[in-house]
Amino acid sequence: MLSFGEGGAAFNKLLQWFDDSGELRQRWQGNLQQARRCKEINERNDILVNAQLHHVQQLLTAMRGGAQAPVYSAQASRVAPFASGELGSALGFY
Image (tube, rainbow, N blue to C red):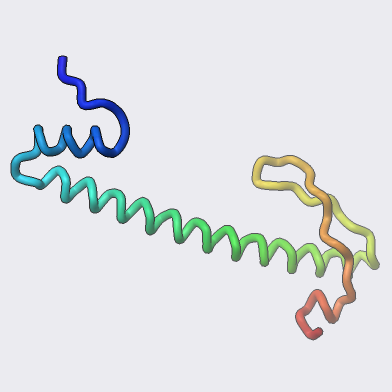
């Protein structure tokens, strides 16, 4: 049985042995680039969602007169509510 070891160097050895045309390596590189791009987009979306959540929580707190509603994470666990603020601050006027 062939053994190329573990990790990236072993995978490169396998590709050198198996992929004479280089097509598989090109496809693999394309997949890695796409995965990096997806990660970047996901990280940006996380920032946007958290900013929007904070804004909505400020608005709810202001509309309830300071009573803070519970906030739940993506895993449905309860997290500490954001600090209350004035309506103008919640609306972005300050």
